[in-house]
Length: 457
Image 1 (cartoon, rainbow, N blue to C red):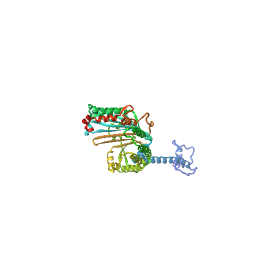
Image 2 (image 1 turned 180 degrees about the horizontal axis):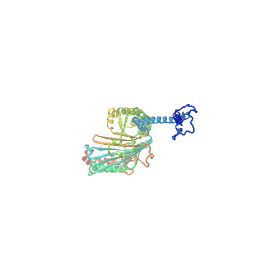
Image 3 (image 1 turned 90 degrees about the horizontal axis):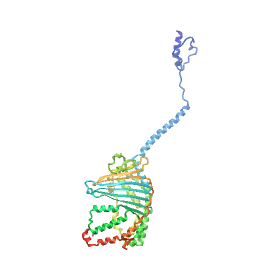
Image 4 (image 1 turned 45 degrees about the vertical axis):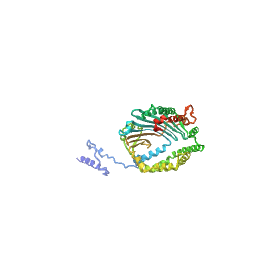
């Protein structure tokens, strides 16, 4: 009995940490056997060891990395929020477009006008459409236009116009499918083909168009001036020199003005008239041009601030007036008798822009949308839809900022001066072609023609 009591006391006391019981008091006779559930496991207690400075140093980098990641996440979210604010998107898109517009920029798009059922044009025309494509490579610029009118009774009437402007100011022009379009237009106009004199006039015009279309024509001011020497419009030597120097001056100053993209950007940022609101593509009206949107990125609806737009326009106009372009134009005016002081004053008054004009312009652009790239904020395109004044108008344009091919002037172009010589030469025949002006004069002198067509007298 005594030995059992000693065992129980040992179990209880040994569980108390830090016990200082003497060894002889806790000793047990080896002859006494312990129970099967060994108390040695119960008395074995592992004491927690205090952390060493070395373990703290291992956790410190983890804390720093975690804090850094948290800072990056919070800072990145704040930057992303700021970067994609509509004001920031509009400023980046417009300023970037202005700067890129004189470097390398390609565009393609369409404009379509359809008369409404209550319009007088509805019974004659289904729609009018202009498809276009432009390329800019610094000062070399090209453009292609396809003009089309879908007539309800005479089918589709269209012709193509291609243009190119070289850095030195020489222009190139190509017109295609003009004769066929002219024939359909004559039928649609209801002109009588049984009149011999009128039929001759129309045939002469048609022949002239056939000779013009499908060829590249070079428009050089100096060549045109020289071509007038053998006509009734021959210019004096001083006039030739003034026009030639004025045109060279104009080309150089326009190039200089086009390079001032930073100035135009600064004016816009001082008067940011474009406000953007993010919208879904489902908001766009369902029509034939919606499907031509190419990779617009994020879509925004535009609202224009009329007051800021007016200030922007006035500032830009004032900056343009301070350039030498005005001086170049004055040189041209001095060489022409068609410019008078009264006419200049009247034109200036007619061209004065008012806030009412800007407000009226803005009121028509309620359904204007811009596509802007999410990452770069590049302006990718624009979409416009207007329905008023008995017509529906839709326009779309896509922008690309790198041209796949260089913009180069067409080869083997013919001088436009050859046409001038053929039409107005006082020698009657030029290069085997009959002087069309003399033939038309003879027709118009006909008494029968004057009698039957008094309105053309």
